[in-house]
Image (cartoon, rainbow, N blue to C red):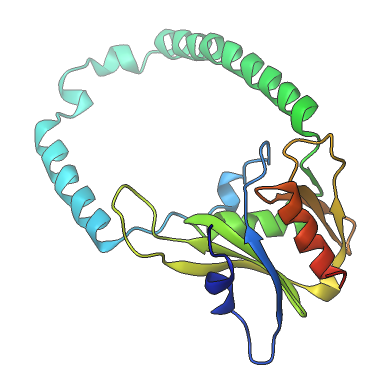
Amino acid sequence: MIDHETPCRQFLRPGEVLLQSEQYEVYPSLPLVPAHLRLPPKQSALEKRIRGVLGNVLGKASRPIGAVTDNRFTDSRLTRAVGNVAEGISEAPENIEDAIDDAAERMMYGKPMEGSWTSMAGRFLVQVTNAGGVPRHQAVTDRRLFVVTDHATGWRARDPEPALAVEVPRQDIAELRPRPRTTLPRGRFDLVFVDGSWIALCCSFQKSMESLVDAFYGRR
């Protein structure tokens, strides 16, 4: 059984009471955070060294495009026009497929979020995304709801590196709203903010979700 309590306890403030902790599951079909709101991913010292070595190797092995092409050809209006048309044709099927996938996900999982990127729900998702790592734990205390991410990712086995991804004071939460049993995944609940926006959160199991919601309302 996975221990969610220990990673969450280290982020408690003096006098704060942990009411319930559960696994955090990223809800399917959540929108992608726009590029201009995303922070560049953090790189470890090892990753930086590897990228540096690869960059040097590739730099020596590659040749400038200008050395093997005729600029009069690549810069011609006709060539650019043909390239734009070809790019548009190639992207069209992908756009149609994306639209079909989005519609199918909506039918299966329902609407995952309400609110703009400047809303409380939007800012919540931006913070979780920019925290990096893999969000693994969520907790309810007598003061807030927070999510803990783990930066110990990748193929090498290593000790967890927990970090606080996002926190929401209780006064900013209007409601934790469980979803009907017919909604998939069964562990879904909506975090509703006082500004009217909301975002779908998820536990591994319905019972875990109910325990988290009950703890928030003092129904333990």
